[in-house]
Image 1: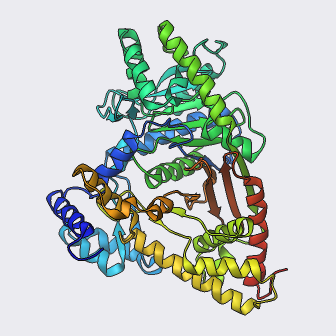
Image 2: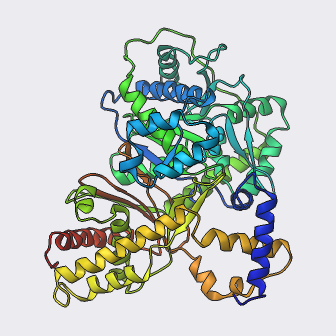
Image 3: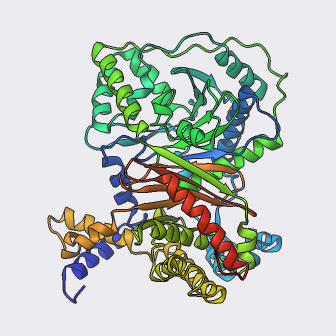
Length: 568
């Protein structure tokens, strides 16, 4: 903006506020406020899912569920005891990930640790979100929800859901040690064999309602002291484990099950829920206000690896008394609210379509061999595929963690760049003849380098989206506005059509989320050594299946160019 203008005044206010609050990030409170004030339902609007690879040791639902409980409790113990290795962001992994450097850093006095980090270009990441992983929940309030943690040592139980019922399973002994895994297996098996039919009014549906509506019904629910005590058991649990009686048979059906399951047998308010299907397919569904994918992925990876390395024997379960389900007394108002929630979530989730694909022509091995960024090539492919379908570029969002900063959350990478547009036009118009493979490769390389630079800038706090959001929030609090926020271009910039996210991990089978706009795409994607994958969610205004087919052709065309040939 111009010197002495609104932008400069707001920026001075932001700098002043930041200096007065050095204990946190300038974006932290704004980000919490944005999530917690949103009155939209969590389902389809906020909660994503991440699906585990299959366990090579078992396809037994009870065994995998008990394994998950035991490993998650062990992870929590490491976290509480300060034994969890810190998260490190390596700017030069070839230099900073060697064993001798880790040993050297270990003996550097903490006051000089920053110098060691700077020297080896490896930076410890903020892990403040981790303390909300366990024993935490989002509580609905009429105007702004609340994040509540129950961190005292008395809450070592897990809530196991089956058929809409809630069972309390103790997972931590009074001395703080995990309950024996064979005892956990016995409890899970007794729940799975419980012949109790689903309740006529399953309480979990209420967590799928708009937040203000659910807040009012929750106030009604806790009027009864026994209901309040039962609800406290759910809120204070380590986490929720959902045991499903059906088995998805396709990747698309798996996504629907893990993302929403039409509200059945779910409690969406919990920090995270582990879901295990009848055939032991598994995923984490997590509430997003408290934190981001970095903390969840760390738990996800370590729990998966631990369960695979320390498998339970299916024959090792002792006989223990089965847990009883929590009971709730539901007034006519609550019964009507549950019926309303059930109908609403079923109708909303029916409008969501998921289209998934795994392409095994190549992966990050070949892409890196060509000195390109795998993530940049995937983002470029989305731009080309969309351009082929609609002949234009649109606002695109890619999430980037800013955990390099205290209480950092995320920044936006904007993949719809000028180099990406040039590439999309060339791949659309050339038909493989106007430009040769060498010229196309130059365009791809330039777009890749540009995207990698945008990614580094976002990770190092040099993006513009969060900065503008903070300025806009300050303007609103001051009862004023700035011309930029009234500009149609700013509105269009924030009307995201391609919302994309990836969590790089070999333990992830698939991940997904709904579009952030009714006319948008929710694009979960992954790059393995020798394959590419995507999971596209759309509402009726968009044809996700056609986009996936376009993407497959784009990946084949890019392979041709990477191989030194013109496509088509």
